[in-house]
Image (cartoon, rainbow, N blue to C red):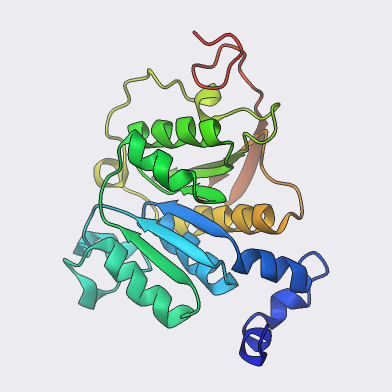
Length: 251
């Protein structure tokens, strides 16, 4: 680690739970961030700032004016630019040491397999139910941890699904893949802008702990944040033996 890196990451190096070994682990880590909207913005910025070595940035959308209320990685001069390119420009200014790999398309399951096989961690920052289920399925297949969050109106959800632990529930244990959910997202129902910052930052917390190997993750818990009164509630979640993805008795 050179002098500039020592200064850049000094506040992490001071932490007993991280130190030089943990920072080196971050530098060697590879993370896929699917979705560069309200959740993906703080996730990408904090992981880049923390020195995660390689970030795969995936989003098939372009920056629009209505995004800027909450998607803080994008700026007004980047209107109509692809979100992955817009995010790249911001992250390069934040930390030029991070290797940024851009994927400006909506992936199918086979493309997800190729990507997820080559990363250490997956961040679900999408707003599409089918995409979430596909991510979960492939993460379970490759035994890669998945940190998934969602936010709508004033309410947020987050959990970590870690298939490396056989007792861990997966996303499909809680949310049935066969449910035909409508397009309930920010565009149709609205969202309180700082809520995305809370949930995305919490995702980044989970990611860095997993990559460094410290603390206790949200595996087995569903965190629910109510921005109306700024309260967190946690529900215990368990593996569903009849889960269509990870269950021993798959239906």
